Image (cartoon, rainbow, N blue to C red):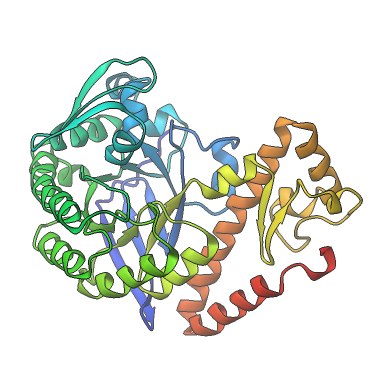
Length: 384
């Protein structure tokens, strides 16, 4: 059952601590507390988790993927069935990405030009044509609360002229995406459309992209084209020069990021929203994230360990099941291993985000930052 608030899209910046920001995004399906980590529900599901579990970890918003949903089951079918919120039984906020990244990384026989990109599905080879207008149309059919412009995301490193070409194309596509969003009545439905800053690892191109997008009336702004092969220091240096020129009164979303350390460092630089498949993918491969760093449950040293991953956690997957049992499940290839470790990981990510929100609110973000770094560096000494 979809529970709509009847409210339109808005962003409230509650307080800052240095560059770190605490705020609230209001959408027709609820309030998103920022900084926020959005679990990735690529194909209308967060892998290995029930929607109710995802919500109980503290998540206010999940992400759906335009590319995958346009191929299967199709946006038109989802619309006929009541929209994505009803379809996946998630009555809270949903963000959909534009599908551009997946077209570039998954689709076959891509041909990109000014109009859009033609490609063949990686599932059955069927041909599609994705334009900025069609991407926004699909997201409108899905009924997502937060939608993304179509952009071209290229891998790094790339030649400067290629980075500039893609950035300029993305700016033109941003304008077309906005026009389509308004033509479909997105603002009147309380939905939001985000522009995407591109520019690769070139500071002047990043600044130019952010400044030009800031002149367009988007409800939020994203930093794209990072976490695509560059080291963390390059990503952070791009944030250092990009966030200061992004609108202060709009949410800022760093796409596809990342590790807990990436989140901590990026919030310190003024980012409000994140998404990444890392916690769910890691869980399915036997890796747990905890307050004291990563725990590889494949390692034989856990086979006789009766302790839970984190006895202080409010998440049952973290506080009830022993490391010995989790190790056994992983080694035996049991599906429950991925379910429990994904649950633990999403819960830890939400715990980290709540800790940052609380610290920003209390004016103690630097203390939280330092202590969290120290805990990760120390690790789980008793388990080593």
